[in-house]
Image (cartoon, protein in one colour):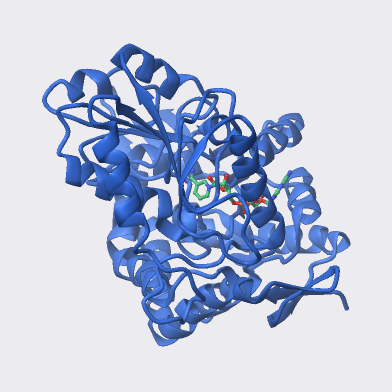
Length: 453
Ligand code: NAD
């Protein structure tokens, strides 16, 4: 029996030339040869599940989510142990998922109800069949939840392939829901990228994916032969523009908090800050002062607000981006390009240029990367000069609104972060394909059928 071992990111360290870490636990790996059985079980279960009225599926799901209350603390602890998020944030992730479950389920139910569109014609939202949900490690519970709940309520059966970094969170989540759900309506398969690829290629009807742009492109190609339906929420390289009329303290707080959230391992974290040169000295000084107050540490450490980087490969990637910036002339205002495993200390770098990886790539670490601009059009052009288009924010006076209108992103914030209210979570350009959330998002997990009689 092959096993997938989950390691505590805070424990990665070198012993001689080898990296060692403490195991949190392990799960049985799903062999690729087992997938046909899993899919077959999912297909059989889906037929019975889809035959239930929408309201009954909704009630089943709500009841299943209620079981999670009993394991709330265990889930939060596992999130911390498996991916390093501090306990307060992990508790927030779990609490958010649980508290919203009832509302989320009823919103999905409402979106999928049959609609009379006049002229003796109605729109039905019918299940697609078997949906593969493939999720990342950075918000291991929330990201899986966002996609699997609409998929289930729409009458599909779901096969979840969680990240190989966080198998234990997924195992507990799914096993708990399955105390209520009918057998095989929701299954979990455990493994890495190869298993994800095999699942996409298997006889399924839809892939609902959250993860990197590179994996998203591969999934799209892999799903093409069967024209499988896709919803993909991908990476970001979010810009922030700080104009001369901005509330300085609010802009500083946002730049630091959004760059450092989840140790910088967040799809919508601020990746590049373009600040008006007239206010840049003050902005940089205040950013450094605030950033120096952040403390790195393990998930259960006291006063920790930046956890470890999830694994040594990601840690190395952030170091390479910092070294690239240094070699190309960036100034380090706080921190350096040289950190031992497993942490990246709060880092503030200025004089970023469009040639640097900190500008062109997603940086999954706690780094504020600052450039100065003289002309707002130059700032807008650099902000938009990316294949990514997830979020973008602008801080400024009333003219910030006109700047916001020119930003090419799925979600734009003016003097605040992105998202909020009853809005979908949506990436433009290569940050996504399809989206989830709100009626328009929920309906992507269903086949629309127009029936006139
Ligand atoms: P990843 O793409 O490496 O992996 C995500 C999942 O996909 C994992 O379960 C992995 O095993 C699987 N996978 C990888 N390659 C695959 C392939 N070719 N076919 C099928 N499955 C494959 O991403 P990650 O490192 O786990 O997560 C971080 C990335 O996710 C970042 O780019 C981040 O911005 C993005 N993200 C986006 C959102 C969003 O809402 N837009 C939210 C969270 C994370």
